[in-house]
Length: 260
Image 1 (cartoon, rainbow, N blue to C red):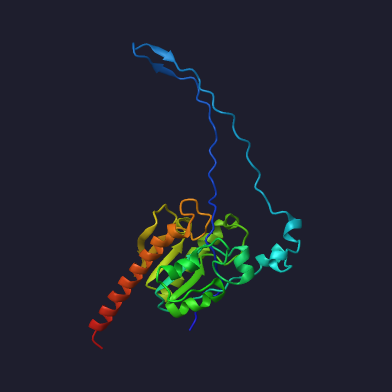
Image 2: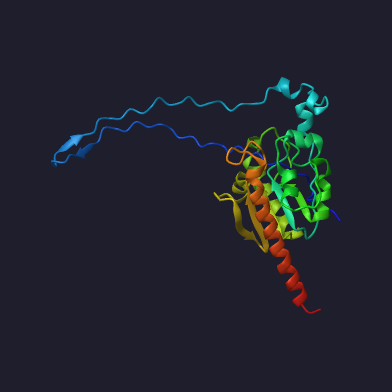
């Protein structure tokens, strides 16, 4: 039976907010030369400070203009749509994104961007036994694979998410993991896990959440500069399959050894 989280979720794109550093000019300070005499440093002029950019806001006319790619809906209409989770108890893997993007929210399916490599990699790695497209994302449950997102709200960019939303989404995501008890939680994107954990990481196996293994792979988007081709990302799906198979075998052995 499919279990929701009480809301809906989606996608693997995030642009972290950049920190701002002000430019300072060093004051003239005394220093000691090689001969032991005091001299003075010549002040080093800093480069002209870059004017602060005003935070851009979406053009209201664009948000309220019917768009053909959204079937005549406006962007405001699409942002009100929610993407359903595909979740159940005791799954092998749950893929976690950050939040729904406009295209996926409109189409109602996970990882449906034209340049997203998620679906072919799922098959090529052997994680599933048939070729699926985003339109059949719900069938992944038959293979013990679920999909969700940290935050339910649909946005044009994940940079539009607030810190309070991210904090609340993390709390709900951890509660979901503890309740559904999958073998593996896989974060689809290094940046997504860093948002979730609040710390830097390398792709691959991470610290468990309770008894649940955590794996981080590069985003399956074709826009990722370090792994632009589908072939570049296959190794991570293969490693995820190896981890799943290992944990399933261990679970079976533990179950067989447990007297009833």
